[in-house]
Image (tube, rainbow, N blue to C red; front, side, top):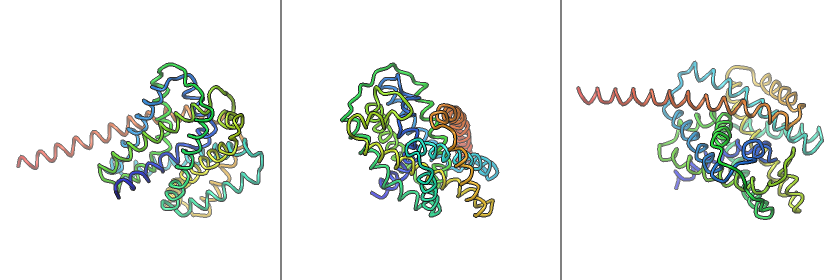
Length: 316
């Protein structure tokens, strides 16, 4: 049972980072799955689980040396700040209040300061509530999923998300067994399919800046939409901030780190939410594909070397 709970916690962290403002408002579904069929959702969910497993195994095998890890984690820390800015832009689009914006960032920074434990506890609470709320609105709206099979859309969605998750999963994989990693991958695939399937049904056929919220309000479920959006945004912000803080505090003074993150993310939030999603997320998708290929090659190379060394030892 401990293995199951450990794998489920890791899956919750993965999903908690994925379902930010882009997902919760329906923007990601609109961008990647607007004209796709159910099979595309299934394939995308499988890709997501496999990419999660790839990063966890890479962490377990420690495929990156210290110099490479420092560079990559620095890149992820920077992308984390950008992501936080996008999430804040989503909040700004919804509440139209600078005070709520500042309060949200402050609260999430406080939670993130508590580190890995605080982040995991926050996700264990948020993710199940998000799933329930999206499931309810999907049943009520019951939109039709109509479209064609587009495997590249599914791949890009999964790759975009794994780019956000990589630093977290690499670190989590260090202390996981093969069975725990495999279970985590299965849980991630199941959970993300449930979410994107329900979100697709909940949004259809509305298209706009906030399709999920608009669809929910039309069915008297605006409250459920707000729960999803707020929890999803907060979970993503907390996870991204935790990764950013974990890296930055090792190289810079804490006060400087907190000040820079606060100012930089607020600056990014000034730009329109839908514009940020449309322009930045596809870039993250392509970077995610490159990262997956690079990681897979490194992992395969290391496994081959280990196998070869083992055979040599047995021979002599």
